[in-house]
Image (cartoon, rainbow, N blue to C red):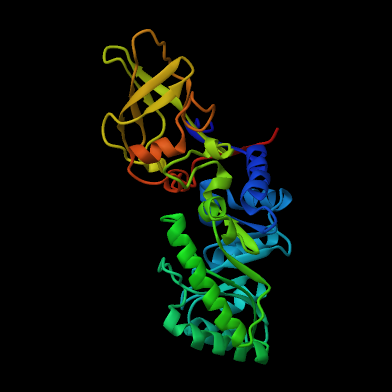
Length: 355
């Protein structure tokens, strides 16, 4: 007899498609759109969401690492796949074989590429640090990186197709200063003989608040999944829908204690919230969370609400204003919405739906 599923996540491919189209119109505008599918598409399901992104207006995809890019390649045809979290233990020949674009930040990465894939003409996105200090070449090291990249271009090892960076997104003013540093670095690269056809630095925040940062391509991550990257506006405020709806069954009720047990816990990837923090949505009304355990959640049953074993309770996602959002769970756990959805354990079933 099959074991009863006590929790699962419904993934709306229709909502994701609408979000990608909305991101193209409202964030990328005339620029190309790159959708991040790192961390198993933020816990939603990487191959499925990657294919839908490309069908809905994205021209390229971003992953973190080479292994993920290699595994994803058979699902996405010849679409641009950018991997930038590179390790000395990575197989650059395998990356070249899968036609991955590599985000290069340091000389050792160029030298490793020369040794492991000397005739592959790998597409490279050369990264300058503009103040965030999330990898990227420091400005003082940039001229040497540019010089070596040009030498390897001439040898047929690589082609620098893009120059890029990350922004701190602490304020529009800081982003504009970083953008000026970026353009200065691009000028040095061009003086050094590089001719990249793509410049990209903006993610959702800068694309929204600093339009001049859109350049040739905009990278959109968690917004496309219906979770806000902002503190001052929700995903709904931005016009995005939640793609993931996480639900759990009521597995038992304690009438004397006016509590119910749900079949999901932090062993399934939920945040281990402080006691008596947050709520979940039962069809009859909200139920306050008393405790998040390893395999269960204990909720209180208010007077006048009938809860029975087998009832389906929504933890986040679902109807806005009726169910909690991933952002609310993030606020309860003192973290960000990305972590709420991406931490959902791989053993929790994903049920992909489409209108």
